[in-house]
Length: 297
Image (cartoon, rainbow, N blue to C red; front, side, top):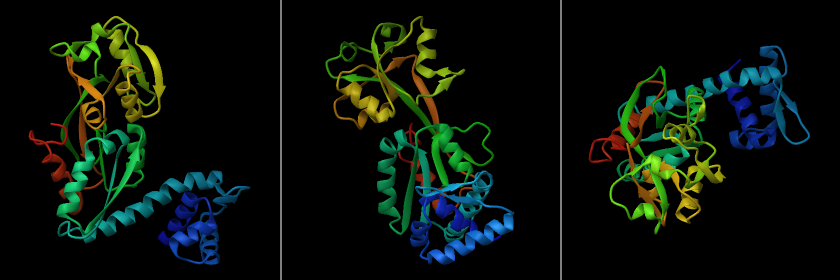
């Protein structure tokens, strides 16, 4: 069993095709098939099965794949770490994050990075939930993750400040005309735009939990898949939404209203290994991107 054979298996699964995987790897399809068969002989059974449309994993393949992915991606990280050991002059950096952060706070950081380190190619991996982000980081997809503090994470975790969650609505909403922040209890009876991926507290959706603490049940006007869609709905006047303030700033027509007591969530940078080279430099840029010394300060 070799690392190259595992790399071939991962490519076939990702492409769901032997021919496309061969093109991606720049090898012949016969050479690819030969290496996959050799790998299957090594593990003692079939890992892949040809389907009517594409290629699928056998039960043995599903058990083997996460370990193969980790080995392949760990090797990639090792190569990148070696190249970046003396700084961030070249190579590439893989950053994983949530979609809401990718469209909100990270574009200016990426722009600054490109100005300072044009020789380092950035790869952005976006996920919809914190669970998905953590799972892919554990599987070695990226060198560095930006997201909420991962509980019990075994590697380094660096705080980037607290993300403020606000009410977002449209211009002309009476909430935008009153002075000071809004008490949650005042929102009883208001229609909400909900995101199906909102966090959970004590096994319940976060907004349901918050509103219950204030004596009412939120009225759902529309349910969306992504927070960026929910904010656009709110800006159009469909209803109010609770979302990070940076998304409001990036959405035309959206107006942010503070809440009392404030809603805040810590955001961090975390990795499987010590932060060195390009990864350390990227975290430093995140920490320096706000006056308070953090990405969300």
